[in-house]
Length: 279
Ligand code: ADE
Image (tube, rainbow, N blue to C red; front, side):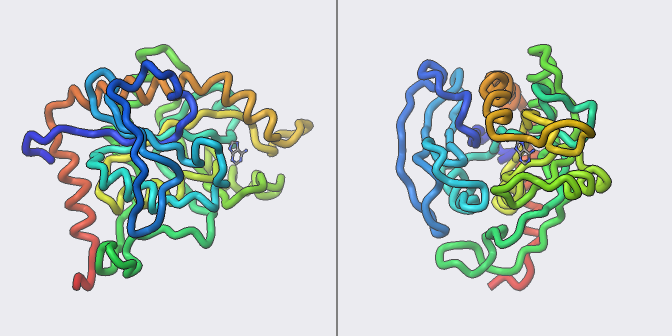
């Protein structure tokens, strides 16, 4: 990728990108992958001249709950569409006082509390990659893409934290109080249900991946306060989702203006170096 090739940016999230004037030359493509069908059609187009592909993580009708999202098909489809980057948005609960509902956080790490999700492409699926892949997870997110998102948020004047560890729970239920307190003790700043395995698979696919988290609630760890509820999450999300979408849209321009793309080779080299028993 450092050889003059252009970038193409996958955007996972959906909400907040429904302005019909945002995507120029828009076409919808229904695709399938060796890992099955992605959550919805790929919406291909350009944001201010930069090629982008939009995909609704949960489907446009929000038909897939977090543990049923086909994360492998989503990432594979974006890779097959020629994406070099994936920028994601995610609603999160906060595990620390300073990260307030309405704030943005550019994630920099995760703790995986999910189970049973397909979290590797290297499982001998027909049409998938071969070998055994032991990928390092530090850093979990692409620093270049993270910085682009942070710069975009700061330029807009949004309250945005430059770091955050997301504890990713299985769902669909929210955490119990004891779990929430434990997640805090572990050093988590945020809690959500989707960052794993999305970030892991993007890394396996050799993509530059970063995510902007929108804080919607304080989960259920605070004294004398009600537990998080769906209505609270939805209300905070729709009130603030514009901010997360703006960050992605402006980060697209920042990444496209970058003339040094050698970091993209780094993502691909990392995967090549992590594969054992290549067949
Ligand atoms: N998404 C938004 N808020 C959440 C919470 N408190 N727990 C898990 N996922 C969430």
